[in-house]
Image 1: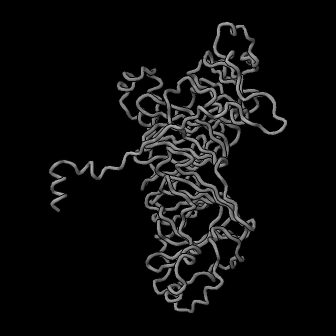
Image 2: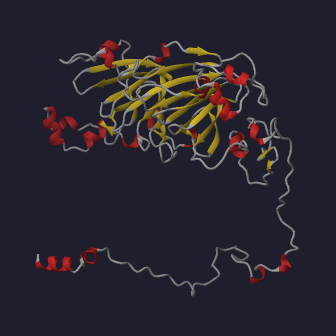
Image 3: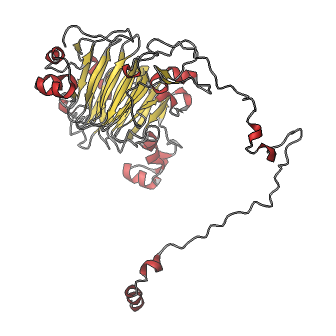
Length: 488
């Protein structure tokens, strides 16, 4: 103690406990031969001669690869003023070029034309795009796919490893063949799911010992709070479903699995816990099951309703919601279905809209007050421009299977730029699905204030809606500029 007191008094403690300084020596490569010994048949040299160093005498050299590229045929709208921002349809363009009006130039290459064709707003962004935004798109098709044996299914995911800006939510796309299981498991995150195809049977028991079993079909949703164990079994037609978690860095590989829990506990403990002999565990799986083939589920679901003293889960606490049977709210240009704790109470902080936007129409410019927005595109082709204060905006293109992500309070729209309906999920972390509509905001603001700010025609200000349109009808003519017509 005296030593420590003395060292402390002298102010030497930081130096005493400081990490040792590691001297890093540079490796001297001076004696390494400059010419490598190559394999038999190798010719030439790995290096050029000193005569290739910059010198005025080489200026007359002819380029071996020409930088002059023929512009080719530009697509409709490509020669227009850049700030009009028309959608440029490159899907049939042989060699799409980064040109918009008098901005940009040809690209000699190399180019991945397949990728450029479906991302025209990145290759030739609207003239109104400004600054730099984090990437707001991730195609699930670029995620590593985890294939399981027996052709039982597969799973791929999006989290902050793939889309770093998506900090509040992540997603998993999972496929089960008929009667295959996603094994009994639980998560550290809340799980919200939308069934994209097929049908499943889900089963769970909550902390009160109340059990729950239900069959779901495409268009239905389920929700399991963190820690609630559950299983998912595909029925006779198999299934594909989307899982959304309320942690941006969540990984499905970190799920707590029943098989691994049994493998990683002493068999004596398992025997004591389940009141049996250790020989009962001779045939437990030797590794995690994750997704595996099972026996057909009984057609009569009541056979699997194993009720304990606590009884069956009360209806108002149901873990499933049959969204497929909910009639859509139809508006000019499309329709939408909303599911949030108003009608699905157990999903206490998940609010979602299933939105259908007709060709040429758009989900109006809006933003959300308290939550980021996680999108998944189920059908069609769309684009989104995100405005981030004070002076940044960026436009991204989306196709079926893509994830989109927009941070809280950043304005955006979703425009259908294809020839079929765009269908997408708009998922929030919120107790109620809400947004701010730019149309309604301006329509309910005193006209004098709007005119002083934007200098809009009085006739336009008078026509602004006092209600929330949700979806704005449009035209499939991608170069149309006059949308004057029936007021919203």
